[in-house]
Image (cartoon, rainbow, N blue to C red; front, side):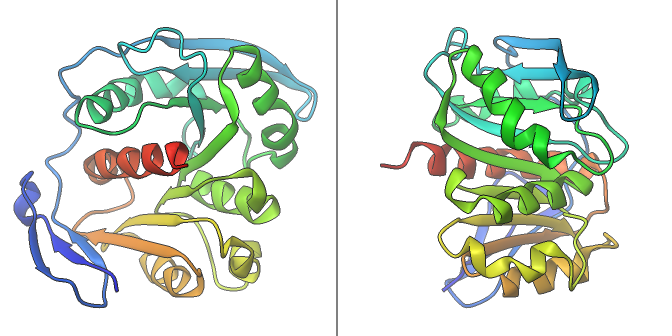
Length: 249
């Protein structure tokens, strides 16, 4: 059974309507208001990607109070088509991560790279995990999160290697019926997937269909569009989910 929840008018408190089959509903968020917490150890470096044949930005964020993140599990971050990893500090992801951990989420590291359009899957499979391992992160415990094109990339990456990921989070993934994610949905039978999408988003109908196609999926919908004014309100729940799957026994 899935719980249907509403966050009215972007309020922080939720009213549980009932434990009935259905979807989780979110109200319209207040826009991007960064949490008033420190970013922790946040780094933006340049690495050579043989898979892409270019230098790429490699970004990492550790929640404040957890040093350089050595030994922490990793969530890979795949950007949308209009962003690169160099934009992540401006999005405030590091501060959202600290806020989520202070609110009770299990600590983990975010690690993203500029992946191309569409994302180069070989770079994510063969190179980014090595870069994370060089920093001392625990790559034996890995999840993946992305939005828009990166949401499709995150799901596609998990479909190609379901044994490598403990969970997938995707904001308005750019999926379409009949693509590799829909065709490979059954491969994610043992991988928890959580989806977030605004009702005014052009991908909403396809996300709705994908939720039903995935064996272990739960989705949240609300009044919002295809942008971080809406998605920023979804970050606390997404990071709580990721922390949970990354640290489960």
